[in-house]
Length: 172
Image (cartoon, rainbow, N blue to C red; front, side, top):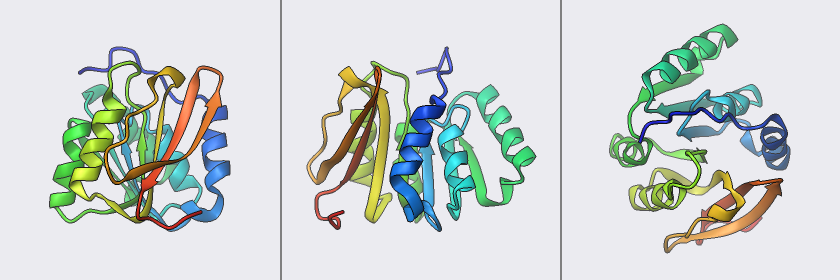
């Protein structure tokens, strides 16, 4: 599934996301699936995340993202992988990677959030007490796999953010 049209996260949505996370993001490991421009993961790094792994399938976006990280001086705390985002969760988990925060911003209307959530649940790439934040059109509310629960849902016009945690995770 190629990303014909890049749709970066609106600044007000990104600000709302990180304002709601507050200091929680500091020192965390972040996985930005369907990274595109990398705006969500870069914001995490700028707000104190320890490291971020960006997964993007489009070669041009990968090159631009690497350059953006270099210009920001963040490349030493980041890795950019060119691969399918849904497949990446399992591969990263098999390599021993675990993340506190997983960001999902796939193309709208393709069911990719639900597929990604299933891959995350099956892979164990999300750390205990970790959080998945998915962005999509409000009509594309994801179906959660067993073991995940909706912690919070916020709308910004047509865009929704879904905060998802493991059912056995700590209560906020």
